[in-house]
Length: 253
Image (cartoon, rainbow, N blue to C red; front, top):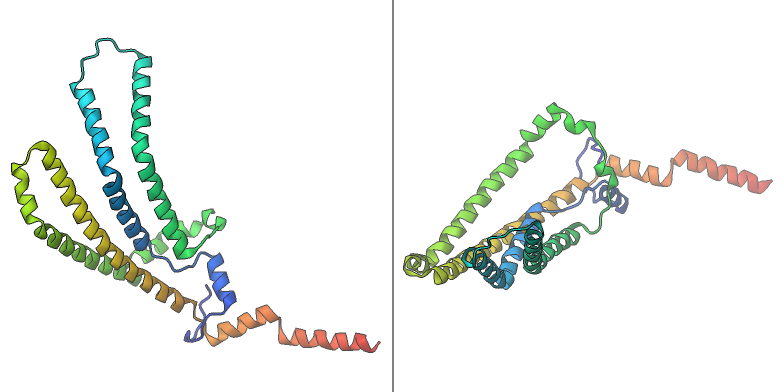
């Protein structure tokens, strides 16, 4: 977007919003997408993880505890792997498909449908090492680094609190048999992941609110920008007056 001297105090016009959208400048938060996908993954594991675990346990039991196979053929190995992939796909396809749907949905809800083929073109300015160093050591990156450190500290605090609340279950793991041990560990991990996902979602919503505010501030216009935009949309006032004069002269004839 053009940056003219002056204070941006005027609300953006619809044309400026449309132009920014055509250029791919929209309010979005990658943190929100990551948090939603993470929460969806934990929820899908809680919904389908039991059946997937049973399938994997049966598969390992069959492969490691079955009768030895003394004759091996290429066709037999191919058939076995095909059957394994089909059986595994029955459990993994819903999980991966719903994760993909969640990722697409949260992006569409944030920015709508955007088709920007110009972003796929080669931009030589992106290879400029000076600009790259300026982006790395910019104030915006310093702010993002501080926010990332703060977010990491918050997540560590949440994880510590959740694990401390489950200390009795964790301490009892050593006395359990393999099957109950695996079940208890899965419960602890999923419960911890769910609480971390909720914390990530709260932080992501705050990040989205900040990104939306920052986007609105960037879209604001200076008086000079507004005047130039009106001239571009309506035409030069002198040319418009000259056109009207010519129309009046033609009408008299």
